[in-house]
Length: 87
Image (cartoon, rainbow, N blue to C red; front, side, top):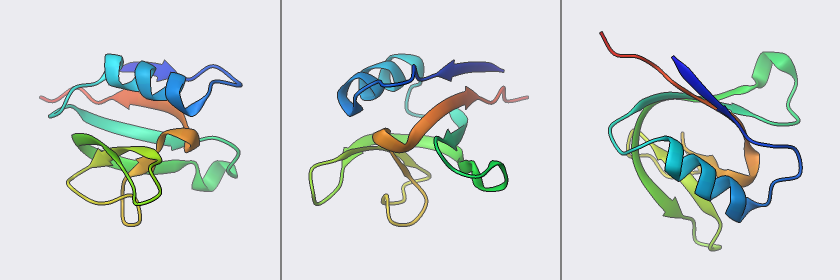
């Protein structure tokens, strides 16, 4: 497994660039949130299916084809992204 940790203070745009350079559509990932209690830090686990924007224009990492309101994670909430090795 390899992991990307978003630097403290990174903007949404910087985070989007880092994440989009780190993962590709089809990668299996675990995404953890920033500023959330330890028990609730895992935001999503699944397959990256896109790099999208919500109805307000905020970008998010699409997981398993779900919109941000269901299972995907906005870039401004991402703290770490871990690629899960398949196999």
